[in-house]
Length: 121
Image (tube, rainbow, N blue to C red; front, side):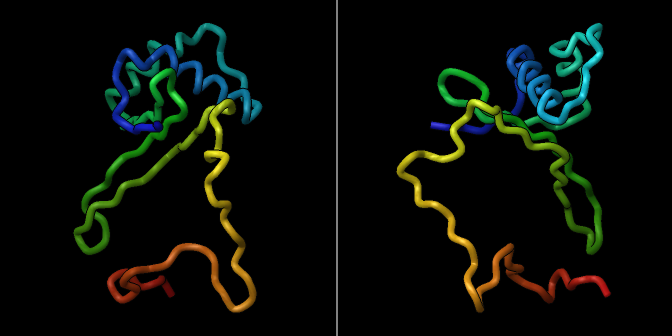
């Protein structure tokens, strides 16, 4: 079972490995002198990090921040990065597969109350 929780310092080595995997995925080189696990702990003091895990390992992570106030004196959470480990199954084998929107049907998200948050312009 996959669970999500806030980053804890003992996650640093595994999270560092995931972050290096992510940079490899994007084709970015990491400075070999960077102590990634120590840097993760240092950065976690300023950045919110959530980790997804099962009983055996970390499966992914997300970095995010909340902003307040934004338009209408509301809070807003901004997700900066989401990464799921390459070895993590994307869905259970017996899970229903998503279908594409057919003619006359719209895909994408739906606004629950469009008057509360009108589209610009």
